Length: 210
Ligand SMILES: C[S@@+](CC[C@H](N)C(=O)[O-])C[C@H]1O[C@@H](n2cnc3c(N)ncnc32)[C@H](O)[C@@H]1O
Image (tube, rainbow, N blue to C red; front, side, top):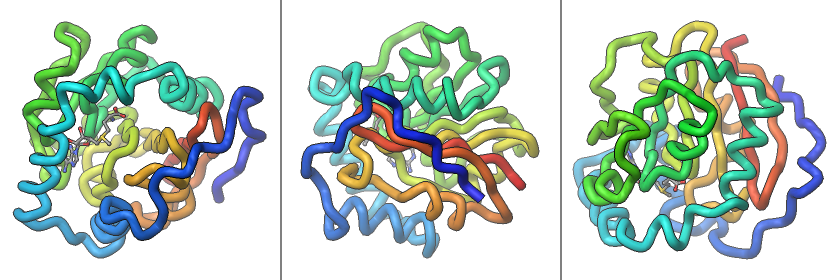
């Protein structure tokens, strides 16, 4: 069961941006529910984000986005003392927030250019495809995904038994890479419980194994 908490007082409706027909939305669902992730997907997604990397921080890393992540951590309650893996860390929107909290974190991204434009010295940067993570089983106390594709089997594999999945879509259901919290829980192997809410213009969910 996912308990919906009241929206953060500063939450707002996202502006119209990407609906259910957006190609990235369709890919998000295919990856989460049909295990569809091909070499062509890898090539195209890498190209797309490489091409946006130079301007990503200026255009997409802002306080409204940070508000959702912070609220997920404040009210969702994942342990900030453990090891975090951030998948699809991009140019460091989440990295900066976790660094301010003193979190032991590792940043993972598929796009060399997104990683190249991420800040230095805040977290180890790992160039990797999250469908086949270069980590042992049970290494993470939390897996953070901000506007990132969900690869359920790999998230489940690297997350410790008592770990938390922190799911953030900073434009709510207008985020191109979007799944509602119930669908995140349904896509992950086994049974998951947690909390969800709204903050900034986004949604978040913090899920743990039941
Ligand atoms: C929409 S961006 C979000 C970036 C960052 N989390 C943010 O909120 O600014 C999605 C990120 O996920 C990365 N990504 C997409 N597919 C991936 C995969 N299979 N493995 C790792 N990273 C991936 C992209 O390269 C991109 O940096």
